Length: 242
Image 1 (cartoon, rainbow, N blue to C red):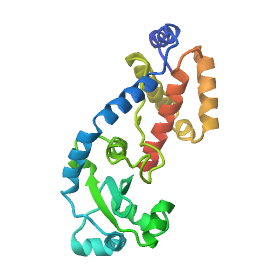
Image 2 (cartoon, one colour):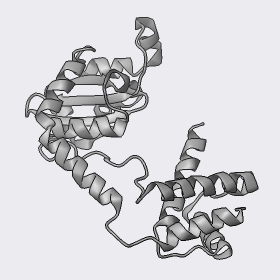
Image 3 (cartoon, helix red, strand yellow):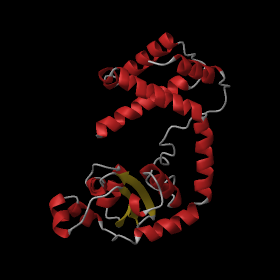
Image 4 (tube, rainbow, N blue to C red):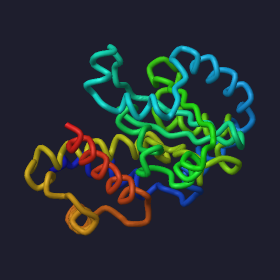
């Protein structure tokens, strides 16, 4: 699977690893500090983006959940976030969706956040604003959603129960670990595509990595096995989407 030179390089990187705080921990903390510090400016920016699309009532959102109605009105589905506001109590809920009209209506149809639905049927006034990911300067739905949750204080003062996902990509200790993981993934696919496609659950992935590390002589006192496990998982997510 690997040349002698590649094996020596991989082993040297693994053997030179010095235990330290996970880089994902530092990345998360830095991101949280910055997003909390900038939340006022973020809200001003998001408010401008909200004005690019109409503000909807729950009844309109329920109507536009039907594709036939959207087609008649020329309304296109898109990836983005929705900002639900309860004007009665000045509370917010932020959510995300790849197809936003297929998701947001569920909160008013007893298929989403139960507390929103209870307040809705109790007569509270709600409005909904939508923001397209591609109209924003953010790169992922997770980033846009988390920043909006903080900007509108949807957690802990609103309906959201947690902040959004900050980490939506692998954070490696260094570039060499990332290169090694990419190399291993490529070689696994080249060696036996069917075997790679069969790594569909936790047990199969762990057993495969255990066997691989044992046969190739890779040490276990590094984060390589965790990186590889997560990379295989992400590859399978991409395949399912395709």
